Amino acid sequence: MAWVMTFAALAAVAWGVSDFLAGLLARRIPVLTILIGSKVAAMLLAVVVVAARGVPPPDDSRLWLGVVAGLIGFPAMGLLYRAMRDGSLVVVAPVAAVAALVPVGWGLLHGERLGMVAALGVVIGLIGVTMASWPVASQRRPPRSAQACALGAAIGLGVYFVLLHEAAAADQIWSTALARMTGGSLALLFLITVRRLPRPPRDVVEPIRQSTGKTACPQVGLRPQPALRLLPKSPSARTGLAIAVPVSLVGATDALADASFILAASAALAPAAVVASLYPAVTLLLNRSLLRERLHTVHLYGVLAALFAVACLAR
Image: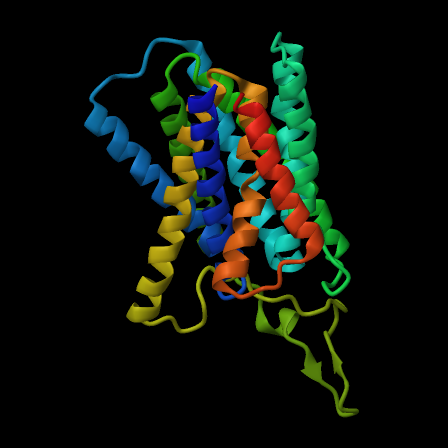
C-alpha cells in the first residue's frame, strides 16, 4: 500500500502545483488562454510519450472510456478555472471533497473493501481536504456563479477520475494519452470556433451617449457585453513567452498528476482518490510560502488532518 500512497501523493502535489499556477494566471490573463493552452501542452506531451514508447494501442473497447474522459475533463477544468477566477482559490474546497466522493463511491460499489483504519483515513481525509481551503471570515464570500461552477467542476472531475481508472484496465499509458489527446483536440476545435465567431456591430454592443449624458443601448436595449478574449490586449513577444511557459507548465503538471493517479488507482481506487484529492493542501501551502498568505487555524487543522489521513491509508 505504501507505493500506492506514494503515487497518489505525487498526484496531489502535481495537481496542487497546477491549480496554484492556474489560479495565479487566471487573475492576469483570460481563463480561455489557460484552459486551451494547458490542454494543448498536455496533448503534445502525451503524443511525445506514446511515440517514444513505441507500443500501439491495444484492441480493447475500454480505451474509449479514456476518450470520453477527455471530453468531460475539458469543460470540467474550464468550470474550475472560471470558479477560481471569480471566487478566489477557496472554491477548491468543494471541488476536492465532492470530486473525491465520486471515485470512492464507485470503488466501494464495485467491491473494494476498506479496513477500519483505512475507512477512518477516508473520512478524516475528506474532512481535512474541506478544512484545508475553507473560507474564513476575512475572505469575501464567492458569488453564486463561482459556487455553481465549482460544483459542476467537482462532479465532472469525479466522473473523469472514474473513467480514467476504468480505461486504465486496458492500458495505463494509452488511457491517459487518449484522454489528453481528446482534451487537446477539443480545445483546438473550440479555439477555431471562437476565432470564427463574427464580431457584433459596434452600434449594437457599444452604448451611445445621449444628449442627457446617460448611456443606453439603442433599439435593442441590451447591456454592452465584454468581448471574448484569448490573450491580453496588445501582447508583445516577450509577454507571449511569459504566458506560454507557465500555461504549458499547468498542462504538464496536470498530465503528470493523471498518470500518477492511474498508477495508484489501479491498486486501490478509493484510498488513492482520497489522497490525490488532498491537493488543496498543497495549493494552500504554496500560497503561504510563496505569496505570504496567512495560514488560518482551520487551514492548519485541515493540513494536519490530511497528513493523518495519509498515515492511516498507508498502513
